[in-house]
Length: 116
Image 1: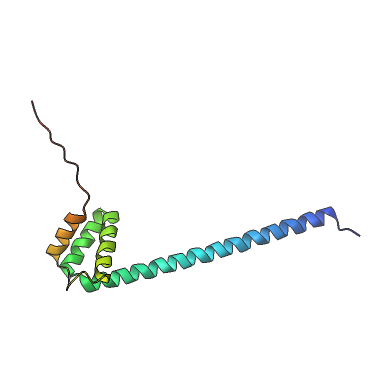
Image 2 (image 1 turned 90 degrees about the horizontal axis):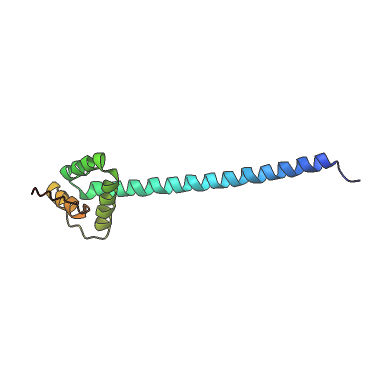
């Protein structure tokens, strides 16, 4: 005796819905794991920066971050990489940070206006 076609269709829909819910749950777990890993990496980077930057250098970097967040993020990554590789002796002070920012800043396009 075969089941009612409506019952079979309903069972198919339930099965499909369960698979979708399971897939969403798995992707949600992956996103949470990625978020957690990113937060851990950021906390580690901040700890390295605190260890290798003086207060003045950190304040200068924070000021840059307010106006140019992407550029500040790149500078932080660069400083953390330098510190972790052992290429930073001592702590970076404000003058060294200023030089580093000038060095890492993309070339500005200058416009020469000549009057004739």
